[in-house]
Amino acid sequence: MNKTQYDYTVKCDLQANKTCKNTVGVDPTRYPGGSIEVKIGWKILTNPSEAKNYITVPGWVKSPETGKCSSQMLGMVGYHLVIATPDHPEFI
Image (cartoon, rainbow, N blue to C red; front, side, top):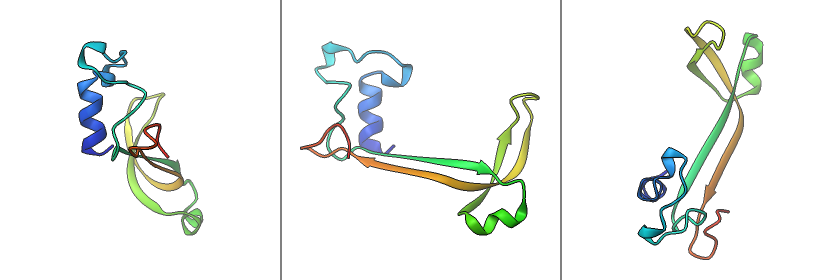
């Protein structure tokens, strides 16, 4: 998220998974215009020949079984970019 969305999130205490406090006079479902959010999904590439089919990055992956991290090649499988505008605070 960019600074606009971050500042709103902190002001509403949304980072703690709480309902926005009405005393601050803001609506937690409507971010201010100019708020930007980016999410990217990655897949562990187990076969080096798969790399040609993806945008790749080296990354550290934590095993849910052992809790240990290992260096893995990751391939992008999804990209999500949204922006809130003054006329569309629900994000487009």
